Image (cartoon, rainbow, N blue to C red; front, side):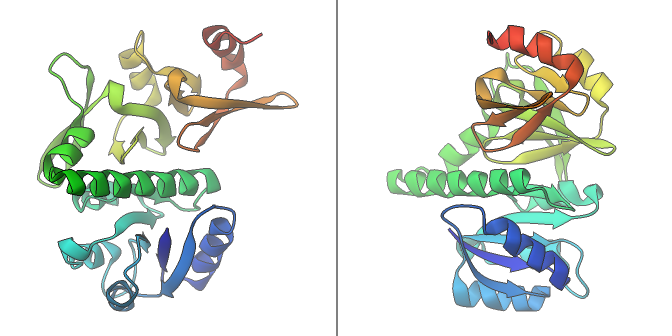
Length: 252
């Protein structure tokens, strides 16, 4: 996957390059320090994925993304230190939204999600059903499913529980992670725990819920336990949740 990095801070670009060095099957094809340079690089390099800082002088990342012609638009992952831009970020169909400082496992998850979205689009185009299939994958909704309504610029989107792989706390918000994108919702983990009691999602940390069938690997180091999910995300298990989780997963 060909990747373009866009951030007005060189230290941030250097950190992203270091993180991408440990992600397989990606190639950094260019860097840009502002929105205008990003648009020129996208036109010239045709990257598959753009890692795009939201807050930049002049043309912001959101404005930059909105000015990319839809027929040439690569997958976009926004990065920012401020979670309040999430609704606008997903309004331009971003693959993911990462808070600074960017964690390696979340970046790898975002890259994997972007790859899946490209594969979905390619398969749907071959079948001549791009719009209907992508929308069906995004929604995955049936009238009987429980879920969440999340805000978007022009209204709200329903995210069914069955589509959520895991949930993480993000300051005053939570991020609902699905196979194709993340959604930001303003709520507390306490309120979530009440809503999710008896559902497919279980709490594994004071800052995280996980769907057990998305757990691909369990790593133990000293007294710590980490869940590696099928999308590559690493989720720490809190000490008080280890016994209950081991019983749920049938671990010895």
